[in-house]
Length: 283
Image 1 (cartoon, rainbow, N blue to C red):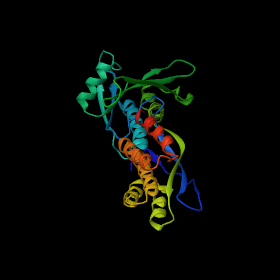
Image 2: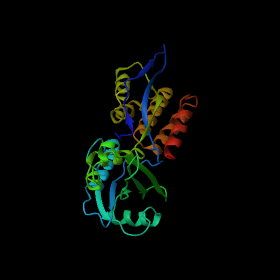
Image 3: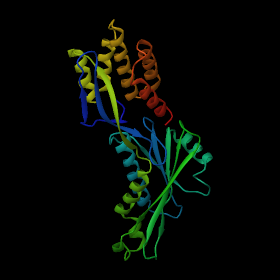
Image 4: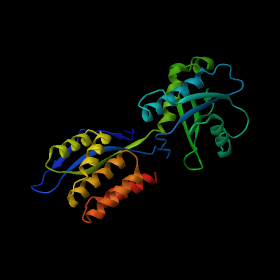
């Protein structure tokens, strides 16, 4: 199951005396990040830049590692799936589309995040370190996403020299985490309804769906849909459309939804599911 579904233990069953019953569950759905990017199911890489005169890139490395960890926690369940590269920063605009396309092509990921060399500001009442991230999705829009963040240098560090501050793991990780926050998924709670009948097989399929085991529920509904009862078949076809939607196969979801409406034109939940599919396809 793709990670854009998170199970919540909130569900309500509405029983009817005859015909199909409906089961409504609350599901937390993944949506694009604050930056607008949604790199779900794609190969990600991070490239961090360091200045030519910088002899110790520990700070830059820690920023990039914290940034990559944020992506891994959100999109890969914490698995170490994001590759991290480094490169000396030369003259030029690394945030330009041409630069990002070239770097992405050279390194090979679907999505590349370039973490710019940090800039330190000392000698003020609130010393800070700031940086930016430039992101390009080779499978998405032909544009560059740009975000910036800063982390304050604690007052206890003001007495330290600049080299000690630049080697501070805690400050670097704080900056990397702030930068990553702009690319992490947003989540919304949504209600979804499926149908079931008074049979063990039908109820078992609902149990699997309520546990977010959509592949298993889909297998059951694919067997149950072979019924000769037209109305029952339409209900299961609708359920299959919901499962395909939850699993990210939106085109197949539309096909099953079309079949459900063809078998039963009064399928009341079909229009709302169709709208959700169209919204999801355009994210």
